[in-house]
Amino acid sequence: MQRRDFLQASGLLSAHLIVGSSLLSIRRAEAATSLPIAALKAALDPKKDLVLLAGGAAPTKFDYDKSYSKRNQLTPQVRVVVSSAAAVASTIRWATGNGVSFAIRSGGHSYEGFSQSPDLVIDARGMAAIALAADKKSVSIGSGASLGAVYQALEPSGRAIPAGTCFPVGVAGHSLGGGFGLLGRPFGLACDSVLSMEVVDASGNIQNVSGEANPDLFWALRGGGNGSFGVVTKFNFRTSLVGMVAKFAITWIKPAAQAAKIVLAWQDWLDNLPPAITCTLHLTKESGGTIKVHVAGLSVDTESKLTVELKRLQKLAGSAAMLRTSTLSFARAATIFNGGGPAYESVLMKGKSDYISEPMTEQGILTLLNGLLKAPGEIAVLCDSYGGAINKVASGATAFVHRGNARYLIQYFMQWENPAATDTNIAMMQTLYTSMRPFVSGQSYVNYCDMDLGQGYARAYWGDNLPRLTTIKAAFDPKNIFRHAQSVPLGA
Image 1 (tube, helix red, strand yellow):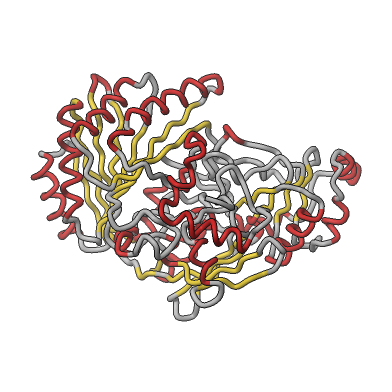
Image 2: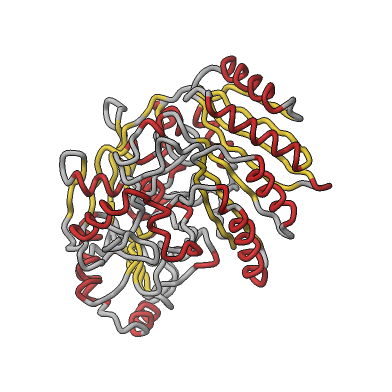
């Protein structure tokens, strides 16, 4: 699954001038909504904050409404591209005072469109500054920054934060939901490196949140998902020294029965895998009824030590059809895993997820592989390796509960071109997902949000941490100002 790079959010500062639109078109757009737009604009900085109205002329060629999941794309009546925490606070007060519901957007990659609203969107892409501390051990990041922009900014220092591989993804939603990436096993999830946050609460107050200041909210925001407690406007992350890394890819193409043996071997291999190595196993169907088993990842240790581990994997799984290793900078490796490209992807897609806490049985793996073969469309399955630093954190230490015994995360992913195929493809995905119920834990990853979970979503995402999350929700947002279809509920 590849996503493409996009116009970095820091470029928004040059987009606050209205270009190619007339005063008449602006007035027509304002007249098209019954909302008191003049009061909103009066509360904002006209030189720094951007108010976009549905039906108004676009201020630039940048498509602010464009989102990753085209299935859920909406044009709000009002979009406010905020430049500061003060602007967020003013917008929240305006929204609550006028009974306007809203969504919060950073990168716009919510699989189910929770960063969109038909009414108001508070768009963080105007807050994208990245500042490395003098000692390089921490970095301040605006919540509108993308992961790609963060990696680029940190590259000269030889440091990084452990986060995802898809450059256009926003740092905010990614980190607030946990944030797995290819530095996960040596350094943990993105949320594990968050030192503090600046947050605007339901009353429009700006709060500093850390282990010392507002510790309950700090706990909840590290894994509790986006859009439930407030608007994070700025993060302070601990950085990790990451110089050269060893990158690898190894592939087998086999009939389902043999491919199942390889997946079983990969599970066994993970048991004693050094924490320096993080990997993802990809499963796709190939021609002739075969399955492609492809494992790719990084080691922060030497290529020679990685080679020893890959020999151990082949001893368990059998000789691979392809094996490649190389030593390169982390920045270069991250670019390769991202896939490059200048455009922000917007696609018809569906994702689902499962956590595996006990080794999956051969029957379970065969059910998965045969399901891929039987599906009339192309479904990709990606298994992200946990363990290492991820599992050393107690399941109750942050709101992110999938620790300790989490072996790997399965993502089921599908995308397509023809809108007419949407219902068929979603049903196809559901058929495969349903067949796997006897073999999985029943837990899911909030960053791969899935409306098919129904009323059980909260338990699937947060497990035993749900009661504490709902208590904190009631304390910090008793009127449920921050809500969407799968936000933290007020009551369990």
